[in-house]
Each structure stands twice: as C-alpha cells, then as structure tokens.
Length: 451
Ligand code: IFM
Image (cartoon, rainbow, N blue to C red; front, side, top):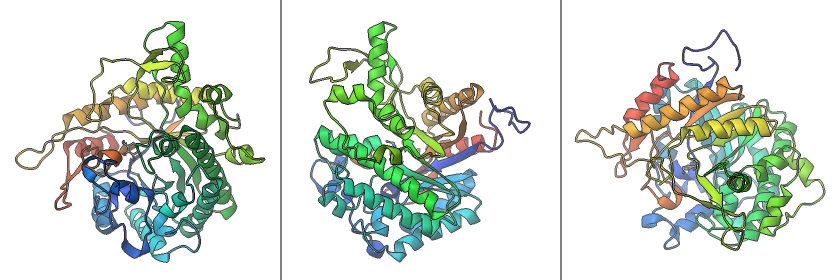
C-alpha cells in the first residue's frame, strides 16, 4: 500500500485516476465523413447473420457530431481522464500513405476540448477498426500489417503528442486475434486458428514497433497496452483442476505478457495448440521494449475443471456451472475475480503500473415512465468491483487508476445495440443522452463519497 498523507477516506490515494472509456466504432458514427475509409467492421456488419438484428455502427451514438455533449457529460461526472480510441481509417483510409488532415483535426479538437475541461485525454490507437484495405491484403496474420500500424502510430504521436500524454497501443489484442481470426465472432470473421496465432504475433510486433516510434518521436508521456486477461478459478482444489485453470489462463495472459516482459512465448501453450509463431530475428526484442503501464479490462471470472485433452479442448479444461448472478451478457458477477487477477498480474510479471482500463456491466435497463433508468444492479456491480480495487491497493498492487466501461450505451459489436453498458442512456431514435442512476453513483465515487 502506498502510505501517503494524501489518502481519501475510502482507501484510495488522492492521485488515483478515475476515468471513463469508449471506442471509436462503438460511438462515432459518420463512417463516411471527411474521407474516412471503410473498416473491417463496416464490412462485417453488412454480412448477413454476423451482427444481431443486422445492426451496424453507421450512426452509433453520433459522437462524431455530438462530441461536445459527451464532453459535457464527462465534466458532470467529474472524471480525470477519458479513454477514447482513434479510428485508423479516419487517418489513413487505405491503411497506408499520407494521412488525412481532417481526421487528425477531429481528434485534435476532441483532445483540446478535453484539456480545456480539465480531463486528460487517453488515446487508444487500435480498438478493432482495421482499415478494410489492409484486411484485403491478409490483415493481422500478415507481417506487413504490423509495419503499417507502426507507421500510423508514428503519425499520431507526431500529430497529437503535444496534447495526448497517455497512449494505449492495442485494446484487447486477444479479441482481435482469436475472435477475429479463430472463432469468427468478430470482424473479419475468419475461422482459422493458425491465422489467429500469426495475428497475435503481428499485433504484438505492431505494439513493440509503435512503442519504439513513441520513444523516437520525443513525445512526452507514457505508453502501454490493454489486455483482457482471463484467469478462471479452479472449480475444486483438486490438483488436476488447479492445473487446468492454469492452462486455461495462458491464451489471455502469458501469451501477451510473457513476450512483452522479455520472456518469449509460452512454449507449452503453443505446443498444445500445435502452432509456432512467425518470429523473425529482432522481433522478440522489439516486442519487449519497456512500457509504462499495463491496462486490464475485467468483466467476469469463470470456473473450470480438468477434462481429457482432445480436439474439443486442446488445453484440457471445461467451464463448469457457477452460482454467481449473471449480467445481460450471461457473464458472472464476481468482484473478487478482479482482485485476484490484479494481484496475480502484479506478482507474476514486473509491471510498472496497472490500470483497470475497462470494467462495467450490461443490464436490461428498462426506463420508467419518466424515462429514468434506475439501474441498481449496475450500481451494485460497480460498488463491488471498485471495492476490489481498493483491496488490491491495500495488498500493494501498483494500481494507479480505474476507468468505467462505458460512458453511454453504444454498439456492442456482434450484439448490436441490444446490450447496454452505459452510465448514460442513449435514445436510439433521437440520440438524446440521459444519465442513469449509475452515472450519479459513479460521480459520487469520483468525488470521494461513493464507497
Ligand atoms: O464493448 C466492449 C469493448 O469494446 C471491449 N471490451 C469489452 C466491452 C464489453 O463487451
């Protein structure tokens, strides 16, 4: 625990950063404005059966036009930071070549307005909207995509480095690689496990090259990566279940954190999947360049038990039923899982600083007759998880901040608009924003009164 005279009464240091996260394709809309090129998600949404109800991000929350309202909401929340993502196809419509000034200007205006409101802009360079032109050339399974990503990152550091001091290279690269190329649940919807592992390597390479570009650009500030670790608990204390839980965690922890911390890839895991990584000389050193923080996106924790290794379960585990209440996503509500994953990462890898970069819950959120959403389940969810952060701090986890997911109801990928995570309700017809009860709860937490 950092013993500082500047502790709030609720166990959080006074300089603990409270924020809120969003992502470009989920909120911006205006997918053809100012020369933006198509992304893999624009195309994926148009393929029948990919997204619930055939919905897409053409309009989303219309934040490309309504962003001043969003900043006013963030101001009312009182958060110290806003984590948004930059749509690569707004900067380089074809994923390469001369950048579009209009795209850069839009994010520069957003960052300026945030700074003027006293809110620190946190920019994520990649939250899944790959320029379609790059997917046509093979996408992340191809090495060239990593090189193009580093070029785009360099453009952004030079363009916004004076304004943005905290950068995230990739958001949840596990999703980009495995949901995008192995299960096909996300764009580009391919089903080829070998391609997913090649994508994982090139995502990491792109991350490392972007970190090098950041340091070379002379921009001041910090850079890190955001992962969504899965560390399921063993269903029982039998040795085989403990070992199964360990194996089940690797694809979403060690596969990323080991190479980033100079330990190479987890061989046993690659062996179980019968794959090898397309590593060229110098790649592992590039991936292991020191970073300033690791962001953790946490929503839920599963329980697993051992199962015979075979085609159905290469890692020899299966999920078991649990007693925990579920959110509208069907995900378990397990706040202690957040404490466990933060502690585990802090003790297993030499991370300089951790942030919870996303945490939140989808609920049905029926508005009452006055249009108010009294989302007490979401408040209970936040309360439990923020308390888990406080416990992690008390156990010396170097946790520096917490970002709620998400500011407002938005396009929840393959679920379309059917799953609502927002602190603010967005009327799908008019785009009108209306804070839910959880908005006021989080405002009170940020102000130091919530817990
Ligand atoms: O909406 C997503 C976000 O884009 C990435 N992390 C998980 C969220 C909820 O599913």
